[in-house]
Length: 206
Ligand SMILES: Nc1ncnc2c1ncn2[C@@H]1O[C@H](COP(=O)(O)OP(=O)(O)O)[C@@H](O)[C@H]1O
Ligand SMILES: [Mg+2]
Image 1 (tube, rainbow, N blue to C red):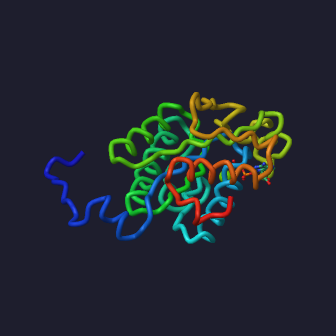
Image 2: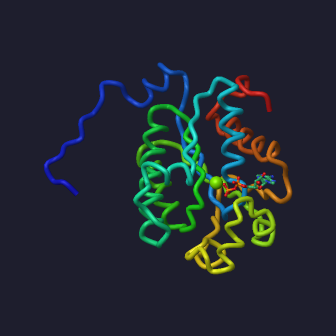
């Protein structure tokens, strides 16, 4: 870390910014196996929030690896760095009052906890959402044919096959995507946001 740096505070505090823009930022962090439904849910949630006039922005694992994180692979250190950067970026979006929605496998509990801590220290809510479906189900779905390749040994370090996935112990929201529809999954998140007072009930159809 550089030593000759000093934090330069803005002239507008977090609460003043929230009052001015009439919106509170937070991060909704989807985690789960590949094909568990993170991107599907994140996309539908973003659409629902935007249509309700609530500014939200999705950061998706695959997409981020085309740009910001294109120099990272799937080994343990790179996975941790992948999540560290996304935690910081999501926090910046949320600090600007946007609802940041992330969709990353984020297999390590420690990395997700670090993301949570980063938000807590900044006074920004962090909502962990476990997109959960059994391995047999996601292997069956296999929308990108990745499980097939991983099982054939064509992809190394594939989560659930040849790399670990540490399920959340106490996620704010747990969605069994093999048991509920995408719409019901989105509703569960919206309900949580309304119940916590993060978004106004009258802004959104539940
Ligand atoms: N209830 C559900 N919630 C989310 N996805 C579902 C659900 N039921 C079926 N699916 C399907 O599962 C797949 C999930 O893929 P995707 O969202 O890309 O997963 P991930 O981003 O977690 O890798 C999609 O083909 C989606 O249509
Ligand atoms: Mg995805």
